[in-house]
Length: 264
Length: 360
Image 1 (tube, helix red, strand yellow):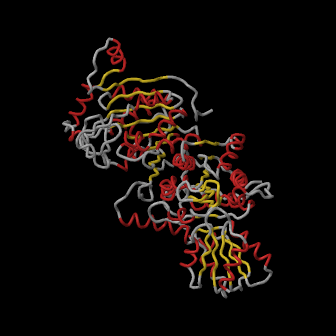
Image 2 (tube, chains in turn red, cyan):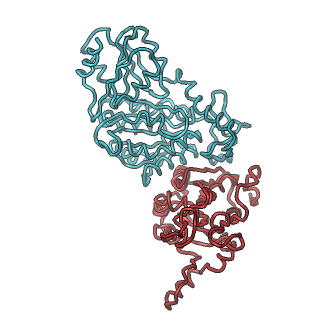
Image 3 (tube, chains in turn orange, red):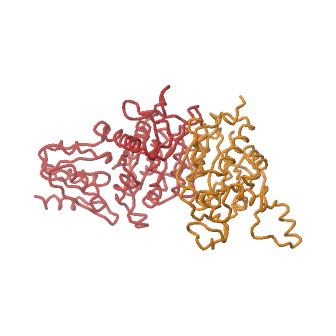
C-alpha cells in the first residue's frame, strides 16, 4: 500500500516546537519523501532519536518511535534492530547528540555496520539548550560557550562514519533538498549502516551569533560554501588552496561490506 | 553449577530473547554463558561497547517484545543509572543482574559486597519504585532470575537481580525443571492508550511492529505517550502511578522466609548472610533465634517485620555499612543492630554469634 508523506506525520502533535526558520522540517520532509518512495509500511518502521531539537523529530512521525536519552539513540536502535531485524530502523540525531556524548556509540554502530539509516541534523550547535558549542561548531565560530570563537577543530562526521566502517556515508545540506532526499533514499535501500549528515540552518542559536541572522542568510551560506567532494579532490590534486569556510558535500563512501541485523 | 551460570540458565528457561552486555568482573560468566547459548537457540547476544550501550540496547529490544536482560557489576551498574530511570519512566520491562563487588569506584573487582542496594533503589534521578530480588543460593539464582522476568513483564518495569560475587561464583547442585512458569506481558487492550493504566495501575504493552504506532519518551508524557513536561498534574499523576503500581502490590509480591516468629532475637538477611544465619541456627539448636530471609528486598517487606511479635532486636548482617539495616530501622520501633562487614568476605557464624551475645 503506497502512503503519502502526511500519513507519516502525527497530525495531532502539530504545531511543532521548532523555531522560525529552523531547518529540521526540511530534513524531516526529505526523510519522509525518501521513506514513502521506498514503499515502506508505517507499521514496519521504527524511528529512534536521542535528545535535542533534531531528536524531537521522532515524536512527529506516526510510526512506533523511541525518543531516548542524550547520545544513546544508536545503542537503543541497535537493540531494536538486533531483536527484530524485519523492522526498518531510522535514527534522527543531532551533531551534539551523535558526536559528543554519543561518539562512542556512533563509531561502534558504524564498525558493526548494523542495518539502519542514521540521519544527523548538524546545525553546528546545541540548539535546545540555548546555543552552546558542539564538537561540530566550526573553528572560530561563536556560541554561548565559545564566546571568543571555537578554539577546537570540528569533527568531520561523514569522514568519521566512512573510516569507522559504515557502508554508506554522505553529507548534504538543507539547501540541497533533492540531493539530500536522494542520499537518504540510497541509505534506506542500502543494507548495513548508512550515515547521512545534513548541515542545517539554526538562525536562532547559531546564525544570530555568527552574522547569519536569518534562515535565508544561512541557506545562502550553505549554497556558497558547499564544495563537492569530487571538486575538492581535484583542487587538492592541482594544489589549489581551499578556503577555510568551505565544507565538502557528496558521497563519502558507498560500499557493500557484510552487515549486521539484515533480515534473513 | 556456578551461580552466574545458573542465572544465565534461569534467563534462558524464562525465554530471554536478547542479552546485551559488557564484560565486568564478577558478572562476566553470565554474559559468557549467554554468548554460548543464545545463538544456538536463534536468539540474540550482543556485546555492546559499554554498559550504557548495553542497557540502551536492552531497552530497545524490549520494545520489540523481547524478554531482554543485561548483567553487570558496580561500576557498570553506576553507568546504567540514567537509562534505568528511562526504563522506569517509559515502563519498559527488562532484567538487570548486578553481581555486586566491593566499591566505591573500581574497588574490589574479585571480592564480594552488597554495596549497591541503595543505588538500585535510589540511584537514578527522580522518584520511583523498583523490584529487586536477592538470591542466597545457586538454586535461587536460577529461580529468582525466572521470577525477575515474570515480574518485569507483569509490572512493565526494570527488575533487578541483586546478587554478589559470593553467590555468583559459588558452585552448588541445582535442579533445573523441564519448564518454568512464564507470565507474559499483557498486550495493550483495544481502545486503550499505551500509557493508560488498567485497574492494577499497569498499562498493557504496545509492542513495536504490531501497529500500535506508539511514541515512547523519557519526558513526562500523557497517556498517549506524548511529551507534556510542564503540566504539574500530568507529572505528579504519572510519577505517583509509577511508584504506586509497585508499592501498592508489595505484600502480594514479597518473597521471604519466616523462621521462629515467636523469637526475641531476629536476624534479617538477604544474600550470603542468609547462609551464615542458617549455619548459626544449626549450631545453636534453640528457638531463641528468629530469621527473616528476604529474597526480595525492594519493595521493602515492612509487613514481614511485624510477624515477629516478640522481637526485642532485629540484627541485620550485610556486606555493606548498613544500607538495609537503615531501611529496617525506618520500618520498626524495635531496636535494630546493624552488623556491617566490608572487605569482601561473608559473615562467619562466630561473628553473628558475637553480635547476638552483645545483645544478650
